[in-house]
Image (cartoon, rainbow over all chains, first blue to last red):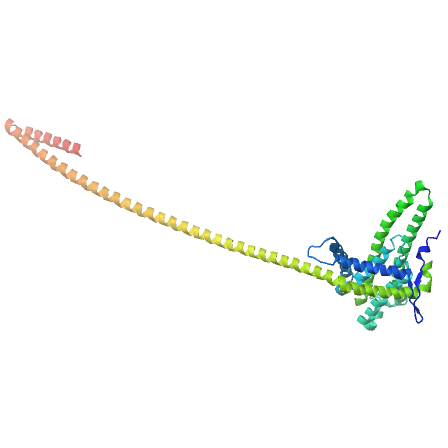
Amino acid sequence: MSGPLEHFRVIVYHDIHLGPLDISISNTTVFMWLAVLFVAVLLRLMMVRPTMIPGMGQLLAEMLYGFVARQTRLNIHGEGEKYIPLMFTLFTFILGCNLVGLIPGAFTPTSQLAVTGTLAIGIFLYATGLRFYKHGWGFFNAFAPQGVPKIMLPLMVPIELLSFLARPVTLALRLFANMTAGHMALGVLAVLGLATPWFLQWLPLGFTVVQILLEMIIAFIQAYIFVVLSCVYIDDALVDH
Amino acid sequence: MPQFDTTFFSSQIFWTIISFLVLFLLLSRWVLPRIAAVLNERTRLINDEIEAARKKREEVDNLKLEYADKLADIDQEAKKMFDESEKRISERRQQMMGEWNEEMERKKLRFLEDAEVARQQAIREIRAQSADLIVDAAEKVIHQRMGDSEAQQILEESIEALEKTTAKKD
Protein backbone atom coordinates (compact mmCIF):
# COMPACT_ATOMS: atom_id res chain seq x y z
CA MET A 1 0.00 0.00 0.00
CA SER A 2 1.33 3.47 -0.90
CA GLY A 3 1.97 6.10 1.75
CA PRO A 4 -0.04 9.28 2.24
CA LEU A 5 2.52 11.31 0.27
CA GLU A 6 2.45 8.98 -2.68
CA HIS A 7 -0.31 10.76 -4.52
CA PHE A 8 1.73 14.01 -4.49
CA ARG A 9 4.39 12.34 -6.61
CA VAL A 10 4.87 13.87 -10.04
CA ILE A 11 4.53 11.37 -12.87
CA VAL A 12 5.88 12.32 -16.26
CA TYR A 13 3.68 11.20 -19.14
CA HIS A 14 5.65 12.66 -21.99
CA ASP A 15 9.24 13.89 -22.02
CA ILE A 16 9.77 17.21 -23.81
CA HIS A 17 12.95 19.24 -23.73
CA LEU A 18 13.28 22.72 -25.18
CA GLY A 19 17.07 22.97 -25.29
CA PRO A 20 18.22 22.79 -21.69
CA LEU A 21 14.66 23.49 -20.49
CA ASP A 22 12.60 20.52 -19.36
CA ILE A 23 8.96 21.07 -20.24
CA SER A 24 7.73 17.51 -19.88
CA ILE A 25 4.03 16.78 -19.65
CA SER A 26 3.33 15.42 -16.16
CA ASN A 27 0.24 14.74 -14.06
CA THR A 28 0.60 18.33 -12.74
CA THR A 29 0.31 19.66 -16.28
CA VAL A 30 -2.58 17.42 -17.29
CA PHE A 31 -4.69 18.21 -14.25
CA MET A 32 -3.83 21.88 -14.55
CA TRP A 33 -5.10 21.78 -18.14
CA LEU A 34 -8.20 19.97 -16.95
CA ALA A 35 -8.78 22.69 -14.38
CA VAL A 36 -8.29 25.42 -17.01
CA LEU A 37 -10.60 23.63 -19.43
CA PHE A 38 -13.18 23.02 -16.71
CA VAL A 39 -13.18 26.67 -15.60
CA ALA A 40 -13.22 28.13 -19.13
CA VAL A 41 -15.87 25.80 -20.54
CA LEU A 42 -18.10 25.93 -17.48
CA LEU A 43 -18.04 29.73 -17.30
CA ARG A 44 -18.56 29.94 -21.06
CA LEU A 45 -21.56 27.61 -20.83
CA MET A 46 -22.96 29.62 -17.93
CA MET A 47 -22.73 32.76 -20.04
CA VAL A 48 -23.68 31.25 -23.40
CA ARG A 49 -26.90 33.28 -23.73
CA PRO A 50 -26.77 36.02 -21.13
CA THR A 51 -30.10 37.61 -20.26
CA MET A 52 -31.14 40.53 -18.09
CA ILE A 53 -32.98 38.14 -15.78
CA PRO A 54 -30.31 35.49 -15.22
CA GLY A 55 -30.80 31.75 -15.03
CA MET A 56 -29.12 29.57 -12.43
CA GLY A 57 -25.81 29.20 -14.31
CA GLN A 58 -25.55 32.84 -15.28
CA LEU A 59 -26.41 33.87 -11.74
CA LEU A 60 -23.61 31.69 -10.39
CA ALA A 61 -21.09 33.13 -12.86
CA GLU A 62 -22.19 36.67 -12.07
CA MET A 63 -22.01 36.01 -8.33
CA LEU A 64 -18.47 34.64 -8.69
CA TYR A 65 -17.44 37.62 -10.81
CA GLY A 66 -19.18 40.05 -8.46
CA PHE A 67 -17.45 38.49 -5.46
CA VAL A 68 -13.96 38.77 -6.98
CA ALA A 69 -14.66 42.23 -8.40
CA ARG A 70 -15.86 43.47 -5.00
CA GLN A 71 -12.76 42.13 -3.25
CA THR A 72 -10.51 43.67 -5.89
CA ARG A 73 -12.16 47.08 -5.69
CA LEU A 74 -12.12 46.89 -1.90
CA ASN A 75 -8.43 46.04 -1.61
CA ILE A 76 -6.96 48.00 -4.52
CA HIS A 77 -8.10 51.49 -3.72
CA GLY A 78 -9.01 53.68 -6.66
CA GLU A 79 -7.57 51.51 -9.41
CA GLY A 80 -9.21 48.17 -8.62
CA GLU A 81 -11.34 48.10 -11.76
CA LYS A 82 -8.50 47.40 -14.17
CA TYR A 83 -7.14 44.51 -12.09
CA ILE A 84 -10.44 42.59 -12.04
CA PRO A 85 -9.63 40.36 -15.09
CA LEU A 86 -6.25 39.40 -13.60
CA MET A 87 -7.71 38.69 -10.17
CA PHE A 88 -10.67 36.78 -11.58
CA THR A 89 -8.29 34.60 -13.61
CA LEU A 90 -6.07 34.05 -10.56
CA PHE A 91 -9.07 33.14 -8.40
CA THR A 92 -10.65 30.75 -10.89
CA PHE A 93 -7.29 29.17 -11.75
CA ILE A 94 -6.48 28.42 -8.10
CA LEU A 95 -10.06 27.35 -7.33
CA GLY A 96 -10.12 25.07 -10.38
CA CYS A 97 -6.77 23.50 -9.47
CA ASN A 98 -7.90 23.05 -5.85
CA LEU A 99 -11.24 21.49 -6.78
CA VAL A 100 -9.94 19.21 -9.54
CA GLY A 101 -7.87 17.43 -6.91
CA LEU A 102 -11.01 16.47 -5.00
CA ILE A 103 -12.10 14.14 -7.80
CA PRO A 104 -11.19 10.62 -6.60
CA GLY A 105 -7.98 9.47 -8.22
CA ALA A 106 -7.15 12.97 -9.45
CA PHE A 107 -4.03 15.03 -8.81
CA THR A 108 -3.98 18.47 -7.13
CA PRO A 109 -1.75 20.91 -9.06
CA THR A 110 -1.84 23.41 -6.17
CA SER A 111 -0.32 20.83 -3.83
CA GLN A 112 2.91 21.37 -5.75
CA LEU A 113 5.26 24.00 -4.36
CA ALA A 114 6.50 24.83 -7.86
CA VAL A 115 2.96 25.72 -8.97
CA THR A 116 1.99 27.86 -5.95
CA GLY A 117 5.51 29.34 -5.93
CA THR A 118 5.22 30.34 -9.59
CA LEU A 119 1.92 32.09 -8.95
CA ALA A 120 3.20 33.78 -5.78
CA ILE A 121 6.49 34.90 -7.34
CA GLY A 122 4.60 36.06 -10.42
CA ILE A 123 2.38 38.31 -8.30
CA PHE A 124 5.36 39.44 -6.23
CA LEU A 125 7.39 40.37 -9.32
CA TYR A 126 4.39 42.12 -10.86
CA ALA A 127 3.78 44.16 -7.68
CA THR A 128 7.48 44.98 -7.36
CA GLY A 129 7.70 46.06 -10.99
CA LEU A 130 4.57 48.16 -10.52
CA ARG A 131 6.09 49.83 -7.48
CA PHE A 132 9.27 50.67 -9.41
CA TYR A 133 7.17 51.95 -12.31
CA LYS A 134 5.05 54.15 -10.02
CA HIS A 135 7.65 55.46 -7.60
CA GLY A 136 11.06 54.97 -9.23
CA TRP A 137 13.75 55.09 -6.58
CA GLY A 138 11.08 56.09 -4.06
CA PHE A 139 10.50 52.33 -4.02
CA PHE A 140 13.00 52.06 -1.19
CA ASN A 141 11.11 54.56 0.99
CA ALA A 142 8.72 51.74 1.83
CA PHE A 143 11.48 50.06 3.84
CA ALA A 144 11.89 53.11 6.09
CA PRO A 145 8.40 53.82 7.46
CA GLN A 146 7.55 57.47 8.09
CA GLY A 147 7.82 58.74 11.65
CA VAL A 148 10.36 56.12 12.73
CA PRO A 149 13.31 57.67 14.67
CA LYS A 150 16.54 57.59 12.68
CA ILE A 151 18.23 55.58 15.37
CA MET A 152 15.75 52.78 14.76
CA LEU A 153 16.36 52.63 11.02
CA PRO A 154 19.22 50.07 11.13
CA LEU A 155 16.76 47.75 12.84
CA MET A 156 13.61 48.67 10.92
CA VAL A 157 15.01 48.50 7.38
CA PRO A 158 16.12 44.84 7.61
CA ILE A 159 12.82 43.87 9.23
CA GLU A 160 10.81 45.63 6.52
CA LEU A 161 13.01 44.13 3.81
CA LEU A 162 12.62 40.68 5.28
CA SER A 163 8.83 40.99 5.57
CA PHE A 164 8.74 42.25 1.97
CA LEU A 165 10.78 39.30 0.68
CA ALA A 166 8.77 36.87 2.80
CA ARG A 167 5.58 37.76 0.95
CA PRO A 168 5.93 35.33 -1.97
CA VAL A 169 7.20 32.63 0.36
CA THR A 170 4.22 32.88 2.72
CA LEU A 171 1.81 33.21 -0.18
CA ALA A 172 3.14 30.07 -1.85
CA LEU A 173 3.56 28.04 1.33
CA ARG A 174 0.06 28.83 2.66
CA LEU A 175 -1.69 27.46 -0.42
CA PHE A 176 0.69 24.56 -0.86
CA ALA A 177 0.51 23.54 2.82
CA ASN A 178 -3.28 23.75 3.01
CA MET A 179 -3.78 21.69 -0.12
CA THR A 180 -1.18 19.14 0.91
CA ALA A 181 -2.52 18.81 4.45
CA GLY A 182 -6.13 18.50 3.29
CA HIS A 183 -5.34 15.82 0.74
CA MET A 184 -3.12 13.97 3.17
CA ALA A 185 -5.97 13.91 5.70
CA LEU A 186 -8.31 12.66 3.00
CA GLY A 187 -5.83 9.97 2.00
CA VAL A 188 -5.33 8.85 5.59
CA LEU A 189 -9.08 8.66 6.19
CA ALA A 190 -9.57 6.68 2.96
CA VAL A 191 -6.80 4.23 3.89
CA LEU A 192 -8.29 3.87 7.37
CA GLY A 193 -11.69 3.23 5.82
CA LEU A 194 -10.30 0.47 3.69
CA ALA A 195 -8.22 -1.03 6.52
CA THR A 196 -10.98 -1.23 9.16
CA PRO A 197 -13.33 -4.24 9.49
CA TRP A 198 -16.44 -4.02 7.30
CA PHE A 199 -18.82 -3.17 10.17
CA LEU A 200 -16.69 -0.15 11.17
CA GLN A 201 -15.93 1.12 7.69
CA TRP A 202 -18.79 3.63 7.76
CA LEU A 203 -16.94 5.67 10.38
CA PRO A 204 -13.77 6.70 8.48
CA LEU A 205 -15.58 6.72 5.14
CA GLY A 206 -18.27 8.97 6.64
CA PHE A 207 -15.54 11.26 7.87
CA THR A 208 -14.09 11.24 4.36
CA VAL A 209 -17.33 12.66 3.00
CA VAL A 210 -17.32 15.38 5.65
CA GLN A 211 -13.64 16.03 4.95
CA ILE A 212 -14.35 16.39 1.22
CA LEU A 213 -17.02 18.99 1.98
CA LEU A 214 -14.57 20.76 4.26
CA GLU A 215 -11.90 20.61 1.54
CA MET A 216 -14.29 22.23 -0.91
CA ILE A 217 -14.75 25.13 1.50
CA ILE A 218 -10.99 25.28 2.09
CA ALA A 219 -10.40 25.29 -1.69
CA PHE A 220 -12.61 28.35 -1.97
CA ILE A 221 -11.13 30.09 1.08
CA GLN A 222 -7.53 29.51 -0.04
CA ALA A 223 -8.27 30.92 -3.50
CA TYR A 224 -9.93 33.90 -1.81
CA ILE A 225 -6.96 34.47 0.53
CA PHE A 226 -4.47 34.24 -2.32
CA VAL A 227 -6.41 36.81 -4.35
CA VAL A 228 -6.99 39.19 -1.44
CA LEU A 229 -3.30 39.14 -0.51
CA SER A 230 -2.34 39.68 -4.14
CA CYS A 231 -4.64 42.70 -4.20
CA VAL A 232 -3.09 43.99 -0.98
CA TYR A 233 0.43 43.67 -2.43
CA ILE A 234 -0.60 45.46 -5.62
CA ASP A 235 -2.35 48.17 -3.62
CA ASP A 236 0.76 48.52 -1.47
CA ALA A 237 2.77 49.00 -4.65
CA LEU A 238 0.44 51.72 -5.91
CA VAL A 239 0.26 53.69 -2.65
CA ASP A 240 2.79 56.46 -2.08
CA HIS A 241 4.81 55.70 1.08
CA MET B 1 8.15 15.21 0.42
CA PRO B 2 7.90 14.77 -3.36
CA GLN B 3 6.92 18.44 -3.76
CA PHE B 4 10.45 19.52 -2.79
CA ASP B 5 12.03 17.46 -5.55
CA THR B 6 13.40 20.09 -7.92
CA THR B 7 13.60 17.72 -10.89
CA PHE B 8 10.20 18.75 -12.23
CA PHE B 9 10.27 22.39 -11.17
CA SER B 10 11.14 23.74 -14.60
CA SER B 11 8.30 21.92 -16.36
CA GLN B 12 5.82 22.76 -13.61
CA ILE B 13 6.79 26.44 -13.66
CA PHE B 14 6.65 26.54 -17.44
CA TRP B 15 3.23 24.90 -17.70
CA THR B 16 1.84 26.90 -14.80
CA ILE B 17 2.74 30.12 -16.61
CA ILE B 18 1.37 28.84 -19.91
CA SER B 19 -1.83 27.50 -18.35
CA PHE B 20 -2.43 30.70 -16.42
CA LEU B 21 -1.89 32.83 -19.54
CA VAL B 22 -4.19 30.55 -21.58
CA LEU B 23 -6.91 30.82 -18.95
CA PHE B 24 -6.41 34.59 -18.79
CA LEU B 25 -6.80 34.83 -22.58
CA LEU B 26 -9.80 32.50 -22.68
CA LEU B 27 -11.62 34.32 -19.90
CA SER B 28 -10.70 37.74 -21.28
CA ARG B 29 -12.08 36.83 -24.71
CA TRP B 30 -14.93 34.45 -23.91
CA VAL B 31 -16.33 35.13 -20.48
CA LEU B 32 -15.35 38.40 -18.81
CA PRO B 33 -16.64 40.75 -21.56
CA ARG B 34 -20.00 38.97 -21.49
CA ILE B 35 -20.32 39.11 -17.71
CA ALA B 36 -19.14 42.72 -17.59
CA ALA B 37 -21.51 43.66 -20.45
CA VAL B 38 -24.55 42.04 -18.86
CA LEU B 39 -23.73 43.54 -15.45
CA ASN B 40 -23.17 46.99 -16.96
CA GLU B 41 -26.38 46.72 -18.97
CA ARG B 42 -28.30 45.66 -15.89
CA THR B 43 -26.75 48.49 -13.87
CA ARG B 44 -27.67 50.91 -16.67
CA LEU B 45 -31.24 49.62 -16.75
CA ILE B 46 -31.56 49.87 -12.98
CA ASN B 47 -30.12 53.39 -13.05
CA ASP B 48 -32.53 54.32 -15.85
CA GLU B 49 -35.41 52.93 -13.82
CA ILE B 50 -34.25 54.85 -10.76
CA GLU B 51 -33.88 58.01 -12.86
CA ALA B 52 -37.36 57.50 -14.37
CA ALA B 53 -38.82 56.93 -10.90
CA ARG B 54 -37.05 60.07 -9.65
CA LYS B 55 -38.50 62.09 -12.54
CA LYS B 56 -41.98 60.70 -11.90
CA ARG B 57 -41.66 61.63 -8.26
CA GLU B 58 -40.56 65.14 -9.23
CA GLU B 59 -43.59 65.38 -11.54
CA VAL B 60 -45.87 64.21 -8.75
CA ASP B 61 -44.30 66.73 -6.37
CA ASN B 62 -44.81 69.49 -8.94
CA LEU B 63 -48.42 68.41 -9.46
CA LYS B 64 -48.97 68.42 -5.72
CA LEU B 65 -47.54 71.92 -5.51
CA GLU B 66 -49.75 73.04 -8.40
CA TYR B 67 -52.81 71.54 -6.73
CA ALA B 68 -51.88 73.17 -3.45
CA ASP B 69 -51.55 76.54 -5.24
CA LYS B 70 -54.88 76.01 -6.97
CA LEU B 71 -56.54 75.06 -3.70
CA ALA B 72 -55.10 78.17 -2.07
CA ASP B 73 -56.43 80.27 -4.99
CA ILE B 74 -59.84 78.64 -4.69
CA ASP B 75 -59.86 79.27 -0.95
CA GLN B 76 -58.94 82.88 -1.52
CA GLU B 77 -61.60 83.23 -4.23
CA ALA B 78 -64.24 81.65 -1.99
CA LYS B 79 -63.27 83.96 0.87
CA LYS B 80 -63.46 86.95 -1.46
CA MET B 81 -66.87 85.85 -2.73
CA PHE B 82 -68.08 85.28 0.80
CA ASP B 83 -66.87 88.72 1.88
CA GLU B 84 -68.50 90.34 -1.12
CA SER B 85 -71.73 88.49 -0.48
CA GLU B 86 -71.68 89.45 3.19
CA LYS B 87 -71.01 93.05 2.23
CA ARG B 88 -73.89 93.02 -0.26
CA ILE B 89 -76.26 91.52 2.30
CA SER B 90 -75.19 94.08 4.87
CA GLU B 91 -75.72 96.93 2.40
CA ARG B 92 -79.09 95.54 1.39
CA ARG B 93 -80.10 95.21 5.03
CA GLN B 94 -79.04 98.79 5.72
CA GLN B 95 -80.93 99.93 2.64
CA MET B 96 -84.08 98.04 3.70
CA MET B 97 -83.79 99.36 7.23
CA GLY B 98 -83.44 102.88 5.82
CA GLU B 99 -86.50 102.41 3.63
CA TRP B 100 -88.47 100.96 6.52
CA ASN B 101 -87.46 103.83 8.80
CA GLU B 102 -88.49 106.34 6.13
CA GLU B 103 -91.78 104.51 5.72
CA MET B 104 -92.35 104.56 9.46
CA GLU B 105 -91.46 108.22 9.58
CA ARG B 106 -93.88 108.93 6.76
CA LYS B 107 -96.66 106.93 8.51
CA LYS B 108 -95.92 108.70 11.78
CA LEU B 109 -96.17 112.09 10.09
CA ARG B 110 -99.37 111.07 8.37
CA PHE B 111 -100.74 109.83 11.66
CA LEU B 112 -99.83 113.09 13.38
CA GLU B 113 -101.40 115.04 10.56
CA ASP B 114 -104.55 112.92 10.86
CA ALA B 115 -104.55 113.41 14.62
CA GLU B 116 -104.19 117.16 14.18
CA VAL B 117 -107.04 117.19 11.71
CA ALA B 118 -109.16 115.16 14.16
CA ARG B 119 -108.24 117.53 16.97
CA GLN B 120 -109.15 120.54 14.92
CA GLN B 121 -112.36 118.81 13.99
CA ALA B 122 -113.05 118.09 17.66
CA ILE B 123 -112.30 121.67 18.63
CA ARG B 124 -114.65 122.84 15.92
CA GLU B 125 -117.31 120.46 17.16
CA ILE B 126 -116.75 121.55 20.79
CA ARG B 127 -116.96 125.13 19.75
CA ALA B 128 -120.19 124.41 17.98
CA GLN B 129 -121.55 122.57 21.01
CA SER B 130 -120.28 125.37 23.29
CA ALA B 131 -122.10 127.85 21.18
CA ASP B 132 -125.26 125.77 21.45
CA LEU B 133 -124.83 125.57 25.22
CA ILE B 134 -124.22 129.27 25.49
CA VAL B 135 -127.28 129.86 23.40
CA ASP B 136 -129.24 127.50 25.66
CA ALA B 137 -127.87 129.25 28.74
CA ALA B 138 -128.71 132.58 27.33
CA GLU B 139 -132.23 131.37 26.60
CA LYS B 140 -132.52 130.20 30.18
CA VAL B 141 -131.29 133.53 31.47
CA ILE B 142 -133.68 135.29 29.34
CA HIS B 143 -136.67 133.07 30.16
CA GLN B 144 -136.14 132.92 33.88
CA ARG B 145 -135.11 136.57 34.27
CA MET B 146 -132.59 135.88 36.73
CA GLY B 147 -130.26 138.24 38.39
CA ASP B 148 -126.67 139.00 37.59
CA SER B 149 -125.40 136.64 40.17
CA GLU B 150 -127.54 133.78 38.94
CA ALA B 151 -126.65 134.52 35.36
CA GLN B 152 -123.03 134.57 36.30
CA GLN B 153 -123.40 131.23 38.08
CA ILE B 154 -125.18 129.65 35.22
CA LEU B 155 -122.54 130.95 32.81
CA GLU B 156 -119.79 129.48 34.90
CA GLU B 157 -121.63 126.16 35.09
CA SER B 158 -121.93 126.19 31.35
CA ILE B 159 -118.26 126.94 30.86
CA GLU B 160 -117.35 124.16 33.29
CA ALA B 161 -119.59 121.82 31.43
CA LEU B 162 -117.93 122.92 28.20
CA GLU B 163 -114.48 122.35 29.67
CA LYS B 164 -115.46 118.86 30.86
CA THR B 165 -116.77 118.06 27.46
CA THR B 166 -113.50 119.29 25.83
CA ALA B 167 -111.42 117.33 28.32
CA LYS B 168 -113.37 114.17 27.57
CA LYS B 169 -112.83 114.62 23.82
CA ASP B 170 -109.10 115.21 24.32
